[in-house]
Amino acid sequence: MGRGKVVLERIENKINRQVTFSKRRNGLIKKAYELSVLCDAEVALILFSSRGKLFEFGSTDVGKTLQRYRQCCYALQKNSTGNEDGSQDLYQEVTKLTAKYESLQQSQRNMLGEDLGGLSLKELQKIEKQLDRTLSQVRQRKMHVISEKIDNLRKKERDISEENKQLKAQLLDGQYLSLVESAGGLNQQAAGTHKNNEVQSSNINSRPSLQFGSDPYLQKEKALDSRTVQGGSSNPTQDWLL
Image 1 (cartoon, rainbow, N blue to C red):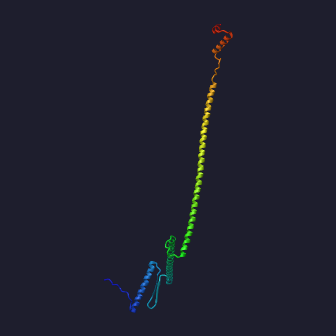
Image 2 (cartoon, rainbow, N blue to C red):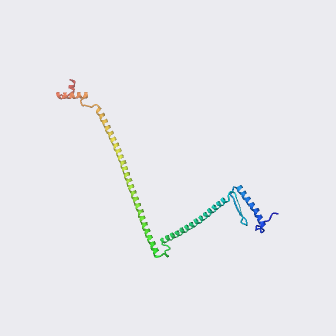
Image 3 (cartoon, one colour):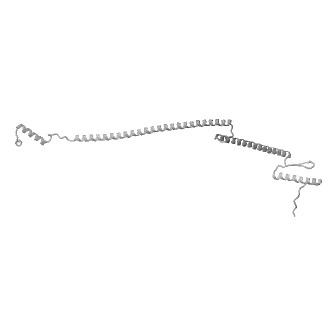
């Protein structure tokens, strides 16, 4: 049968209590030594008996280990305090921002003419001044925007006018070139016609000219006529027989 659960309680017998303390102390020191060797841990063990007697064990130096322990405790305490302070500051900042947000929401509603019932005369006058100043700024901004738009439209108008001038100039240049080309074609046609006329005239002048009296028969007839006139004979046959 297994052992039952051992109830831990104070040993009333002083001798037995002292013997148990000695045995358990040695066992605890042995376990601490084994832990430091096996796990390369820094171990410090401090024991006080019921009579106030000190027993200690350290893998290196108990004083150095205790000093390291104090530094770690101080750093943890400082970090804990810093975290608490940081949390407190963050809470205060969130509270301020929340209050500011609610105030801005209320001001916005008042500017829109809402929730005005609980405002005093001074607060209403302040809101009126703010609205007048806001309206003036809005009007100034509106006039500035309109002026910029007008300037842009004028610039576009100038650009379009300049572009139209350039297009008209290009169109006139194209018409002028067309007229020049047409005139050049007519001149070439007229020159060709004049040249053809000159060729035809030279061909006509190169032909032999027909002169009256160059034909022998006509010259003979002319001679007979002259003889008949001079002799007064009316019979050309007789003259021919003679």
